[in-house]
Image (cartoon, rainbow, N blue to C red):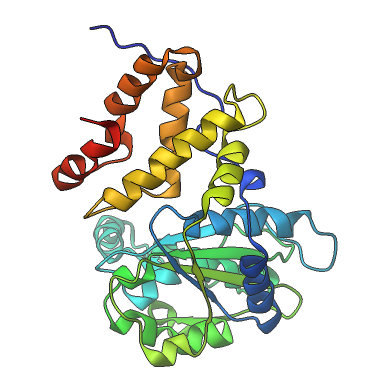
Length: 316
């Protein structure tokens, strides 16, 4: 068997191809107007994370007082994340090693050299970079203030204390750096910080935290929405006809209904359609098409239980 590698354009969909429903757009606008974080839930693969890229790109194109970057600043939450990590990190080990090396030169290792601003901390600082004392905390933020979209991805992964520990900071948009004698960095008045958080609802978030958020649940798209998403993500150069796309979407929906552990998500549908297009399925005979659909089930089905459950969809 020979394995062929094909060049594929736009494997990572761009923000302009993201389809935002009216309800979701309204939730985004409300969060921005109230200057509150937007908390998103929904099945994995329904576009929660990618929304931040769409919002950042859209805000960057708008003319006005707020100057946004066209990409979000991202914080990937881990099970070990602490509240401080969202704002800055301090490399104590490197500082200790540098201090020992420099001791012979009678030079003190500056604490600020081992502090690095992270997603939300960088966004807050960037709204008023001239307000930061460079002698205490050198940064590479430039001189001009600007706004940012911050993505806090999968916040429900963090320890339960994490959301409670950032209540004040995320409401006031300010934080302190303990290692610099609690040096405080505050958001400037002329720019904005837009925070988007995602959750897979793996565990409940504290009520006090939820009260400070605008909430939206992204429902799974219906058939017409799936067709629109597929056509948008595949691009104008796609060789699929609407008729064949609808047939494949019907198969996909059947698989979702049969799956018992992990129903495939929208992102997996798009990946499935891409690989089938690369295999030129639209020019295959009916029996060959059925064979190709079976052969590429691994893109959609990720557990043994689900593979056994969906066999009937393809008459296996």
